[in-house]
Length: 283
Image 1 (cartoon, rainbow, N blue to C red):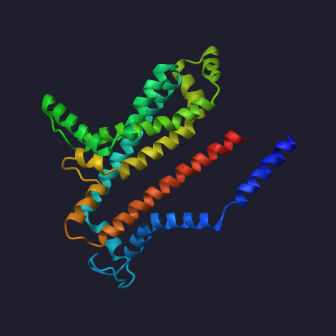
Image 2 (cartoon, rainbow, N blue to C red):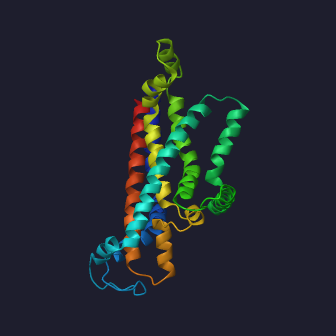
Image 3 (cartoon, rainbow, N blue to C red):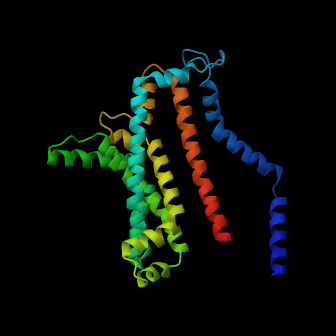
């Protein structure tokens, strides 16, 4: 055991020592290319200018953030976005957790087939998903003689493409837990539903929380599918797009900055949750 640890430490030391200055420069250029536009966007959200066509610093100001939250249309878009994201995250987490439990009990070709069907919405182009969902909602509305597109069509569409992420977040936790715990709880007289809530759910809760945060993040950030399924309902991404089609105001910088910060905080929470899960597995 000591020799194996010594070999691993030497290999780890060699790996760290082989990091050349060229590779560090390459990584720095990649991060610069990815995040420089976002940094510029955040900086110019505090720029005291009346139009985005002038890329000259005119002074520091918070007025674009103040005007942002005084706009009733933006408030409505924020409210719609939060409602859709919360409802979609809750339903996709509920359905995704139940689906993950069912998939974990499958074996052989059935499990592979279901996993392929589950992963397909993640690799399918969003514009294809958006157009197909729009056609489905319009057809269903004509059959039932109801309004076709609105906030409920967006929620259903978001639940659809968020489900695979929840399933993939819960499945690893189901693989890690002892499969005999659920059976032992039933042998001791616990009903199936209560055994799941008392025994299985606490074991997979980190995966459930991670999947819910991921679903919430994806719902807030989505534009393409929401655009085709929205009808007259506006969310933040759609409102930002509509602002770029009209007179481009510096308010879009402030709005994009707020949206970026919210998504960044949620992603940090997800990564922290995953790192904690890895530490628990190692210990």
